[in-house]
Image 1 (cartoon, chains in turn brown, blue):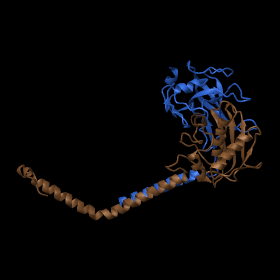
Image 2 (cartoon, rainbow over the protein chains, first blue to last red):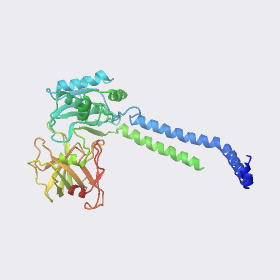
Image 3 (cartoon, rainbow over the protein chains, first blue to last red):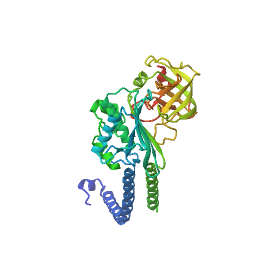
Image 4 (cartoon, chains in turn orange, purple):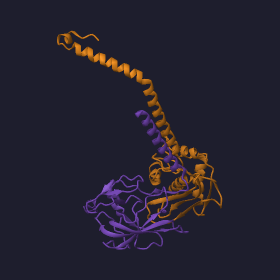
Length: 209
Length: 189
């Protein structure tokens, strides 16, 4: 490093040269240590990234999709409608999942999944789903129902059936606004007319079946 | 040496995190539940508007009721009203128990106590501010209420805090955009 004329005149060139030498020496030292240090850092980063990827896979969510899975899938994929009056709506909701995804639900009187309608009162929920999951992630006993306290038109009821069926099939709520698995089916129906699965729901269901 | 230790602890942390996530997903003999909310609330005012009252309660007991042919499984928590709040914005619905201090009421919550993924349940001994509505469920008694909007109207006092000066924290997150904490003063205005 050549000191500038101004630095020489001001008597600062010595310190500039010393600083430059020190910097050079320090760079040499770090050059010697770099390979080992880099290898360790890379190993740490690789482990952390691998753990993150595996965790997100295990949780059933990916960055590209907002769907999330319960980790519990329906097997066999059978359902039993416990309400003759609402059977056509429920069957239509099942058909919507079957036609749009790789799920293949079919009616069976001995099914572990019961689908029905009843009046639970002013619960704040227009539909509910419950499931019991085995240690192997299989849902063999579950229920999905519409709360008759809420007077909805047919397609809005279908949005609730489709949503609740999505739960017992293995999907959690989705953050996507127009998704059938959005936590408020009234919102998606009113704002987007959703009563059948949308792309995010389809991707989620296809990740389970 | 230090670096090695760091790598080991990072690896151990990753293994623990992975085990937790895998454990959650594996649903080792668990039960779960989820509901579709009819309304989401975006302010205390909108929550109050749909409620019969807000009450400061202490939960004294709890009982589970199994599903019947006409009713879903639910948990009924018995609670003593410490202080009722009925600002003008609260609705006035008829046919329910008078919500005076000292009254005993029952709060119904759909689901079961062992639902690992269900909505949070009231805890015996806990002190809560609850926004409540008459159940309007067939066969329900006049002293039975639901919490407005499922978990929306459910605020719990921190353990050891005093109700008069403490903050009540929002319990549960089903997508409402309500204040994370409220105080009794918020209800007295």
